[in-house]
Image (cartoon, rainbow, N blue to C red; front, side, top):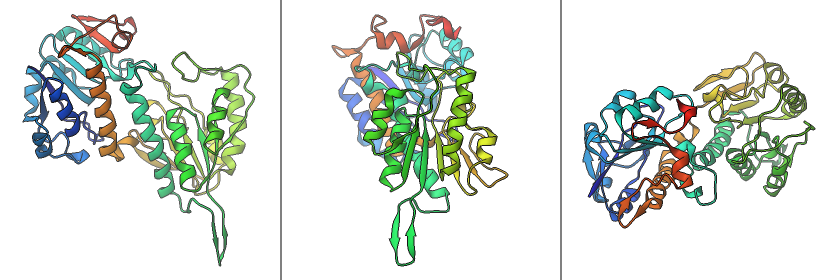
Length: 371
């Protein structure tokens, strides 16, 4: 029986765990001997006893070096990679565009490494799509963070003291995170407007009860993976001018424009922030990759000179670790189950999903973009 090891996260921001007790039990039925690093699930609300009851063995971190398959949430250190068994398989969020030295470390160690970010956005791969599952939660958390940070209530209220107007939310970017942000803001009673460079998403915005903001940028579109295409400098300037008017009327602005593997575009300038109402709130969901908002800082809240609160949280989904781990763990299980046949996990490089996400194998880096 092959061994699967669940790592404990060492990043102080991280509260998630890659496999929940429920997933550990399912993996056991799939033929794996599951070992969980001691205390790995505590921050997410899963005790060692729960893993033991699910059939997993509680182990020390050093036992990862003897496992056939190692799974985590965040990328490991190069030192940890060097301790892994040659021929083993590692799966986590590896950030391969920015961690080329780490990908080389996997190749040098003879470990097959799969980057969860590289799972293709195809119908069959949806059940393994970690970026989508976690972005969904991040969009939800961004709205709650804004709603609990601003000094007003979200819904309209008719009271004997008068009518209280609803908060005005402006969501920039209508991908997975943006759609969830729209839906959540509507649920708490806010008035919502949204913008995206892809006109094709207008119908989705309207279906959630929000208003789609139209800004004429000329020709725009989306990639084969469904992401917005990068804008020209001229288009970015047109976008900023159009958005400045909406931002000036908004109580909350949430930006979601991440470009995987590249620096996030600056969408909200300092000048636009200066034109916003005092005590309004901006949540920059792309702050970890450079930020969509000028002046935002990773894991800090900045107050602009005119009193606008700019929140830069690099891992919003970590604020709901039980649910985030449940979804991440399901992605892990679905990935392993998809490539298991006759009780054996097979690294099938002919499969488009495996081919897309494996970044190192047989002592080599498999994608020249990461060399």
